[in-house]
Length: 250
Image 1: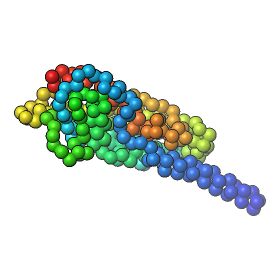
Image 2 (image 1 turned 60 degrees about the horizontal axis):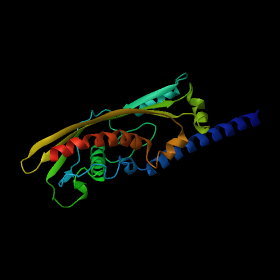
Image 3 (image 1 turned 135 degrees about the horizontal axis):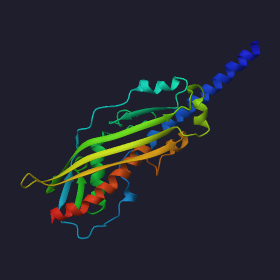
Image 4 (image 1 turned 90 degrees about the horizontal axis):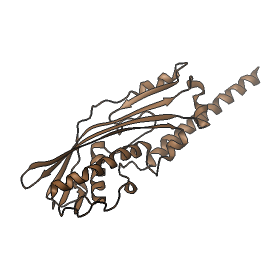
């Protein structure tokens, strides 16, 4: 009887150690991925002819998102027998994500930086730069923005029991799926007259499903999964607005 009890203790200990090692690996590796929202390969270089000969400075956007984020307590719903999945949503993913850490700078900062880099890489004008990264004021136009939404909904799978869900993680069954929404308002201000001469709305949504713990750690193209998805929404939305922006500047 004593040997059986000892054997059970060893088995439980090994299971717990394996479970913790998988999640420690996931939590520690993910922050090493690129957290920026800019994907250079997705931007066609100099794809717009005869860019207007003006310089645009982009400032960090105003954050008008709902200040709503999921509760850490919701993760423990997975302890309830029969629970197949747990959903947790947040509008401020840089502050809280339940199943994969996303420790980026504030989204109103990183979205504005990405917009500046996309516009500059695509040659929307002679030069576009992110104002906090430059120590000069030689620009005629300032691009302002409002971040209305950066929703991340995470769905983690528990397969009916927290007690053996660790095994599904280890063998590579789906661990988490995502839904994303991004909504940004842009305004171009002519500094000489202090007028807003152009406005645009960037918005989009997409799903990205069925990541196991190993693919989550790997990311996509070196990017964190959350950053990759937001960049996939943002980049085509910015590119779509460039002809209108250039027409206004001419």
